[in-house]
Length: 172
View (cartoon, rainbow, N blue to C red):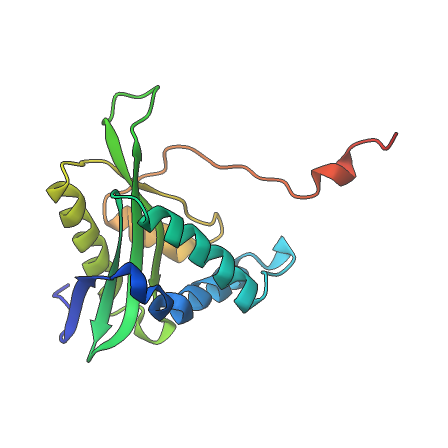
């Protein structure tokens, strides 16, 4: 698929972090739609405040970046990436890029913007001497799994979660 016409990718200045809030909330709502039994997401404001804090923390160090995709100067997607140490178990690499978020505006999905963003992430990581990339995908997000597998990513480990553990413990 050729690059979508008119889309440009640039590093986002951390001072401009709030530009991605609508794209974060679009992803949050998409995740809620593919996990209907999860009890509903946090409010938009609370979710963004928490995610913004995480982003700011990662971006305060030297090993993190946000790439923003723009169409006609308007943000249509972004990828938040930070570096982590390689696995102590598997000899895959010494450092790995962790994509924390890759979001494309719902009206722009299917046009190749995610592909361009992911390619730009790989280019940035290669420039930093990093050759491993990983990310988490919501287990019911089949479209995302298909997208990432089409781009060479494969399932490696499964992240399991349970909420309400205090309710599961006997009361004394």
